Length: 344
Image (tube, rainbow, N blue to C red; front, side, top):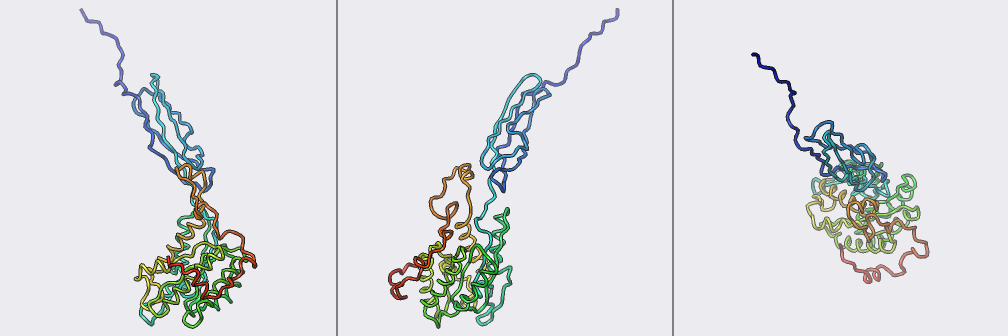
């Protein structure tokens, strides 16, 4: 007797348990506090298909600046369900409250260096500190158009600088003046007189509602050093009286790194110009960079209490009136004796 064939159905392998894997964190940068669309992926394993995934907010949604929690769930054909969550962190591209800068001064701004004690050469505008500074600012503040104009003139005295500056300010219309001047006539002109020239330059900028970052003079290896120290004290006094914020203290930086001064004992080396750009960059970042409250909260930071990042700059205040902003009635010796702030 022939045996009857048994009927039946074949089945595939038993699916594994359903799981859903989310990324640890998804990050993005936005030019605007409203945020940007963010794409992400989650991975389903096991379970019996179909197993659709539902995430809130969905991939491709616009995520605002800050941290947003995303919740995802999956349910398969056998009604197994599981889920996971992860944060999407969107930070705002840094922004500056000022974007147009004018670097004004003598050969230190123009970009001269020395290959031998009596041999000067120009490193070229891109390699002078203003050119390097512009590249640093553009690399960080990618959502803005940053300009740093180089108006340095080799051999210029502070008196000639004072004559030239108003016309340059009117023509270039900067938002911030980067001022480094005074070493070329410091041997032959009283320190107090050079300081008055610098003070008048600051006043010329402030009358035009231009912020000022005034820098201390670099150290030298010759007999000008003591006069430079005295003038730098005057520069700190000018910054205080004109309420423009602390000077950019190049003197302290180069005093601690003497190899940045070239063979003539006066002009920076190529590395020195790079260091100048770094110091000005940090001063601009500290003074003018915006930090939105929403970003600070998202990153768990407290808003800064001191002037600088996220706080109004003292130099952004209206220019002082001629009455309150006039020069101190004290003569130079009295001012120096009253003050005598150490070089920082």
